[in-house]
Length: 205
Image (cartoon, rainbow, N blue to C red; front, side, top):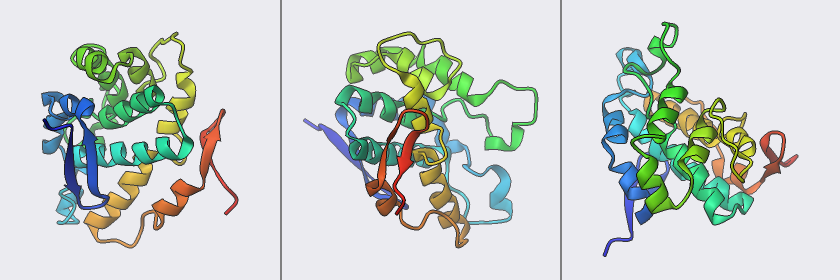
């Protein structure tokens, strides 16, 4: 019986997706991100920028796992953060952020609504965590009053130094062929510690 899947990624190498997360990865709502360019229409200027929101979602998931390990989070807490990292972009419109100036609902709100509907059952059944907590980590407007302080995890996922940025800064630079990005993610992840106000802090090094 397969208890995990290894997905080869251009930026992070081998990404391990454990069995409990496979139903989320294989869900149509996440699979549709294969058809959304991470950088919208930027591929018209940078022909290599054909990477997708799906790739970015997997990369954010991979970095989130490493941050959870570095911070020593409990297993249930780590699953909530990793699920939120994996699903944080499922509400994205076509053309990525190119439509953000239109009068449309924020993609975080759309993502949280899908988590509370289509994803609620697999999150409860396979991850054994509350979908409301996962939704609140993505969208701070979700009214979650459970036992977990999701404000800390929301800051962890949406802070200055978060798995979302640690993936897309490097991924976008790689596929655009530009010398930017975060050069030493490994060192950063060795130097992080939990911070109640900011989610995560980094040492003076």
